[in-house]
Image 1: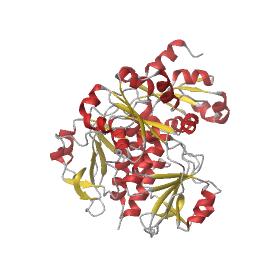
Image 2: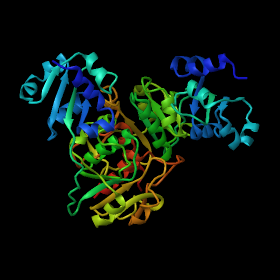
Image 3: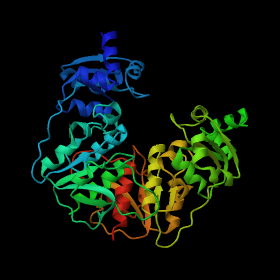
Image 4: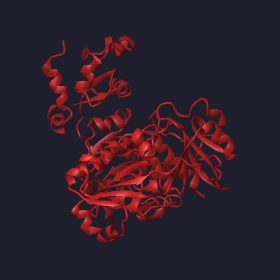
Length: 246
Length: 246
């Protein structure tokens, strides 16, 4: 039976402090739970409704963590979603391991992207464009924040992240560093190498003054109208799309 | 003095029903309030903190609607933002007028985009890429929803929207209709005309079966990794960027 202590434990994982302390995180909803179960993450707890249980009985019999059939009401009381009639899974976090940079790699670096929705969307974009590695400044949103994982739509299982000091990481990588600036060269015209680091800045302040000198090529997304700027996830997608053109 | 009735009136504008009934909407925060005041919208009420008043005294003396200096607490109690120490403005909605389609126009059509954040972000993208007109199915998110206006970052003042039956609108426009489908031609290779309608589908279901036959050219965003899909606002940006390339 599902104990009060287990419920309390899962609820505590809404907070970064407890995610770090317990080395655990949770995801919700069909898409993310199924992706998590199919990944190499160690899933420790699975809470599911009878609806989910009926649809995935073989999956449940193979599952070797603790599994509990619960009501929709219980799912919604422990999770982050307002509506969840499917499942919630708890898994062990991975260590913050350095990225394995291969030659010809295209990767992302995020300088203080704070909004969890933006980070999750960027992880999904990276996964779409075949970018496996993201380096993040230590002040960026937490990868295991439920909103990040949710917005990633399962892509968090396929993208590696590494929180580090970008002041040290960028020069050490020996890769060209591309960054978006208002005064950069148009991404429609610039020569974009197949390998390199695309550095994206903070939602309000862009790329910090400390990191700007480490950018080896300044790029800009050409503007045809009057909006002052683009959201950071939108800009990331447009830049990745231009890099992946032949 | 700011009356209880005025506060009640503003609070009612959180709901679409009352926005329609009162032909009014509100926006919050420095960026959107300033863009609204600089636009051709008729601004009827302005609530502002002393901070905003001190910074914009000449603007306030030119303002001919009802202006009230209030505390941050009052702003936050009537608005949608959790934090607002600046201003909130109420304006009159515009009529749902047919779009003026010019030759060589590139425009957007949204088939049931329901999430207010997505609609607001798409309006901002349209404004960036110089797209002035958006036709929306009648089930799409409401343009005057506070979350839509907020995510548009002021671009709602520069983009025209028209809620209509796209089954009638699309053929009547006589423009080529481009739509994103998994099996479409790569946007990196397809010939994209400078005029046309880019049709984007619902968050879960894509372009509806009813509208699919009206698409004259199916497009797809090439995928290099494993994400199942892209968010609709992300896809809109990438497609617009490809259309605007020379």
